[in-house]
Image (cartoon, rainbow, N blue to C red):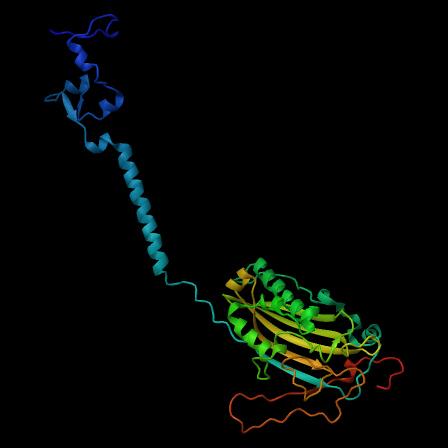
Length: 361
């Protein structure tokens, strides 16, 4: 062969540059060789008949890794688009949440048959059916918690503890009982019930919807005050699944308060006032997440209380020495249109009255 060539060991040092200098900038590395469009057959392949010296390399073969990456990206994009489509077109989407129901309530006064007995709060409690009741929040006990078909054990526990918190704040908080601020109760309500709650406290009405005493227990500070801060409580809480989106908690509690005339110095003329409250609470998943509840039904029996007393705004206990003789509920006009405001009244059982030693009752 003619022409110049570099020895296998490379160009010796010190050899002056010549015509080969123009090729020094060309580097035939491995990537350059792999990217070549022509590839030389091996010696054995060239021995065959009509064998060509070289073969063409397909563009995809030169970029195998790039081709796999493109295919992988396309597959991921297709899978993502399919998931989005199925999510939008899925025929079994969760039903929308149910609308919040307004509270329906009833407050029934229980009139005593004779005079209301009075005495020291401790003696009254001991000689009444409330003697075995727990004191304060200890009387609002939680049942054993079990998961339901659609709600976990922690969600059921959240519903029960939120209902207990509402009971404690609405029936045991001294500020609320004295007719004061009820913000702590309001904060627990579902936002869709706030307007009804506010109207009930600002403009109470005996119409089954806007009675303040349907939401909470409170006394008019100008008529009665607590003679002892401790309230005796007994009752139960029960949680059930109403639907796949709703939990319901039923509360049934009896509260016994020692009350007296306002601004009365001592407590030796206190009397007991009993409130039996049955309440149904409802929770959707948003309520459970936000620590809210819906009060959908409230039934209250309270006495000793006069039948004619309007208990929509405040509970109005008859105090020691007072009686309800000659008392009768207000009349109901069957010819009047609109929602009926019939007032119910019951008689307080003698067994519910404290029997003090030496009392005539």
